Amino acid sequence: MATSNRLRKNWSEKELIAAFNLYCKISFGSIHHRNPKVIELAKLINRSPNAMALKLSNFASFDPELQARGIRGLKNASKKDAEIFDRFYENREDLAFESEIILANFEEKTVEEKHRKDLPDLESLKGEDKQRYVKTRVNQNFFRAMILANYEGKCALTGIDISQILFASHIIPWSLDPENRLNPTNGICLSAHFDTAFDKGLISFDNGYRVILNPILEENRSKPFFYNWFKQFEGLELKLPYKAKPGLEFLEWHRKEYLNQ
Image 1 (tube, rainbow, N blue to C red):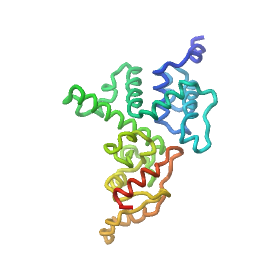
Image 2: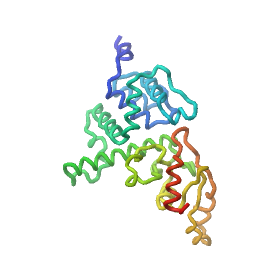
Image 3: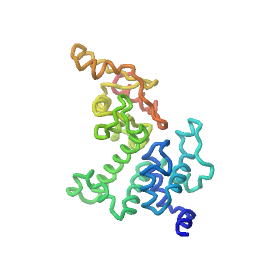
Image 4: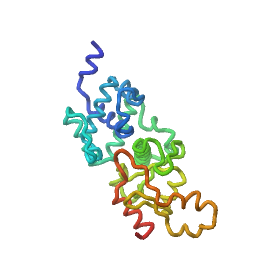
């Protein structure tokens, strides 16, 4: 009887936001009741894995990236599910941070305690400076998790799947476009070498998602690393994610900014 009641009870707003947090951090193809992350969150908020997987599928009903591919989620998604998704698109930073606070509270922690290892300067800050610092670092971690999940934990150029050297590379940098800081189409999963090269404008991508080399690299043509680390990748197409492909408008900005194209 307890299990039956757990399955039937209405979802609270906090439970929905926690579920949406997970929706952002796992790939569409891994939304099922056997996924360890689904099981873990379901246990944390006292839901069944089946109920959690169903809720994640409901969120997919409102995902414009999936809709653009002709994919529809389950038809029984609720109005509240839609409201949570809309809130994210209206203000990604606030809902992402709120979701992390909620998850921490479900774990009986503060958000600072939950993310302590990623907040090295926490003790040196106070007041509003501390609040901004925590929100920024927590949301940067959220973005990284979202982008790595979108690319299934692999570098979009090399296929490297060692998480320690994978980065969620912003196309337009975090500091320059607050509105799109947590926009998944403003990110690409790249391994360390290519993340740095992209960040410094040594490489970019055309509208066909193919690698473009910055002409200044030609100065290194005679050096062995030029072919191994740059030339052989010229024209290579990114391995695109199932949803949230890099926005062409963001790539155009990157080329104009760094390659004058």
